[in-house]
Image 1 (cartoon, rainbow, N blue to C red):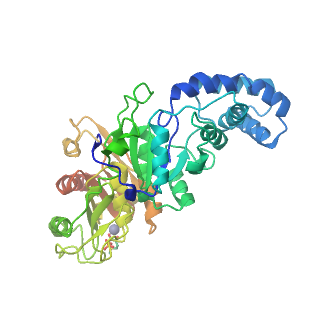
Image 2 (cartoon, protein in one colour):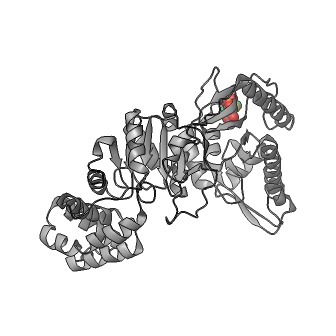
Image 3 (cartoon, rainbow, N blue to C red):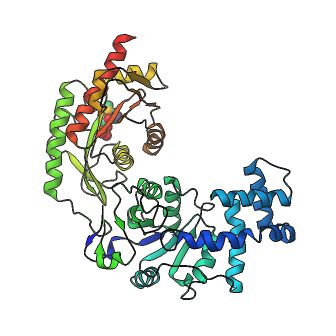
Length: 448
Ligand SMILES: CSCCC(=O)C(=O)COP(=O)(O)O
Ligand SMILES: [Zn+2]
């Protein structure tokens, strides 16, 4: 997805979090200038300053990570050199590089690199009241030095906070972004992450952030598949073009009512199968991707008697953003929509899913069945696993379990003692898949 003409609306976000390598700055500069600079100085640092607490802690981490508790300074230097060659994102390596680079910058040996479009845009965002943060795999010390010693002087005044893999965690894990959001105090949907790496954008989005890819010619990820993430070629495009940051598609009352009518019809059908008895089960439709907005069935209603108004608009975390109380499981629907990109999620309480979930807590494997083509497989000659996760009343816990259990080629998960979650591109596809998954479960039930 590319950006369209327009102008960046600073009201759409409260803060922008920036990756450095490949995003604000050339990876080549880091590889060609900074890595050799630090590598040439590891030996002297370890020999002369090995007792300094930060250096000693990093050395201990190197020994632990390499599984060599007795490695002497020469061996530690060797390991660090190998990690540099492998471009390994090891925290102690980053710490030691950070120390050396900070000193190199302070001495004037080094001046950092920023692409020509970046500094002006950062100044304009800052002037417009958008807070700026950095989240880079380079250590906080290295980031501080980087911004303090730019070609245009000290830029640290533009930046409200610095995050690295030590104080926030790995860059491809959603929890790191949750940690940063909570540390900044900015709501996830008001945070925008810019990175050249699709995996990082996925993780930010999974934490409920906005995420935009920066695809710069010549960078290592320039040809990567950014999926449905909006992409810019440089930051200037935020000034001359609009991205998903600005394209907040307003969901109207009519959109919600229309979705309510679809969900009511789907629920009536599932209820007629006996899959939504009483108030059990819930359904959702994605109405907008950026920001994520879902229409979720209202909680506690008789699911066989829903009307088009028995629906609640929620945000990307499943919290109501309009009147009404959404399903108690709305947060799980939102999580599935974020994780899988699904446009519709079905949750039903079927007898077969409860029995089979209890009999096969390790999951169920299906193979050689024509019905598997109903899940999008081109042939019956496949083997797919239907994961089973333990139930919980805590939707974050349940969501974590679902995320960890997701299986390729299976758009569904059984929640033990509870029911099934199934998803698809739209209500129709999600329904077809739910019917297939339930058929597979009934087959297993009949077999055993
Ligand atoms: C007897 S249903 C118990 C709650 C449940 O699991 C469910 O699916 C329905 O909850 P909702 O809040 O969506 O009505
Ligand atoms: Zn349920």
